[in-house]
Image (cartoon, rainbow, N blue to C red):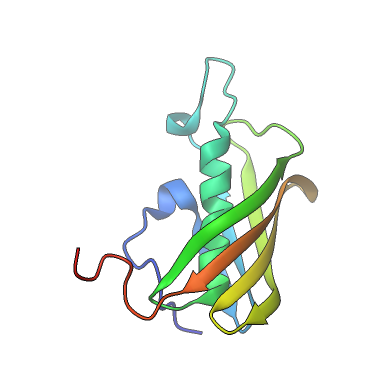
Length: 129
């Protein structure tokens, strides 16, 4: 399936799409040194959240999709060198509103879980700005 959203996103920081299909997506990201929050190599959660958000956007896969809200849980720490896989699936669709569940795993252990509320706007969110 063609990717129709977030074409210019930095895939080093948000992950590389592995698959994008109707109602779901999978994204892979290697945690790099520039993601470290401290000298122990702990990866800042914002990068993991960004990856999950990107997987949610790919699941909706519309040029005008935006994030409206999220409920998320960080379950285990990630460190530099970890390879993360985000698996997203659409749970509900009501008109322009999409609810997407995303789990991020490292070695088959879930490290992050979130539910993302996404909307497809009539025009690009920055149109006319």
